[in-house]
Image (cartoon, rainbow, N blue to C red):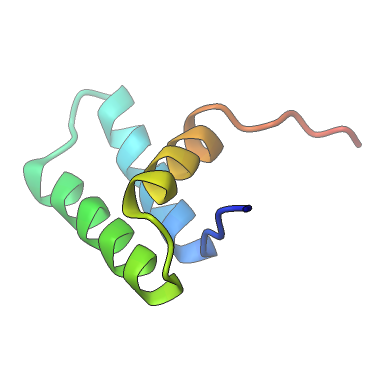
Length: 67
């Protein structure tokens, strides 16, 4: 089963990942991402841990453009 992610969730996670890479990630930002993951998982009836794993894969290891 494919894990569905919203564009908003991906953008939120990308922003948090950028902050983390710059050593400026705050507890508030990290908590916001975790809350969004939980809410998304509940709303889409997906496993929360699967959502988080797929989100990290998409954000941290994006597939290269083939254009």
